[in-house]
Length: 242
Ligand code: 13P
Image (cartoon, rainbow, N blue to C red; front, side, top):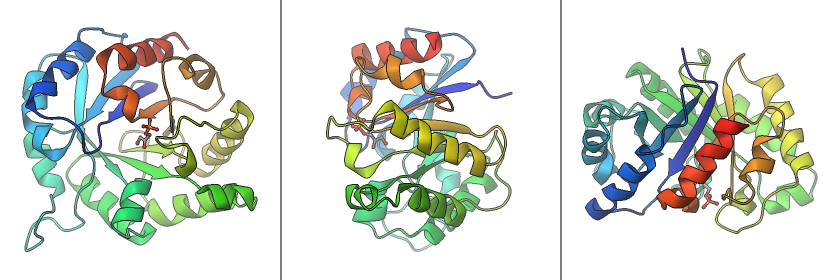
């Protein structure tokens, strides 16, 4: 049975061996069984981090995988390799990958299938740009991304959805609680029953309590603030208390 809440850290292209200490410090604070904690480090750190965190409550995930199980794809990583390295989850369809690597929702759907085939839980990211929000297209955009990126077969155990407005990522700006509530209510309607919904985009120890009080917010996907144990453990504690 999956925990009802999830605090996930996305380290993006940050972290070297020396930073395993931060992961250990994050694992030193256990929020209890209702709150799952996950760190998604760069691929180079998945195996050593999974090893370092063995026996703790903190799990380790990847930030991407290829749609194919193996083959001539230089620089890519297969879902089976993530599992082999000790990962339980993989972030797919992050806006930075959609922008930097031209990933389409169809590509993301193929990657999710590949992740499921290996028993990984997929964390599917959706979110609008600022121009799309200004044009009043937010619900249409996230709804279309969800419909096109999530294959049939999603369950509460194999899938998590993260709403990450592109304009809130790494900017220190967050939507209002009303705006987050509106999108999460929409996703709650559209997503398979029981799938947890995370909010992501400039979550920090100061705004976490307010964000976790919003209906249909079951956790967070945290970038910058997950790199420091002092910050991430405060966010995790706020989620556990919510
Ligand atoms: P920040 O928390 O740094 O805004 O990043 C959010 C994010 O993109 C997590 O996937």
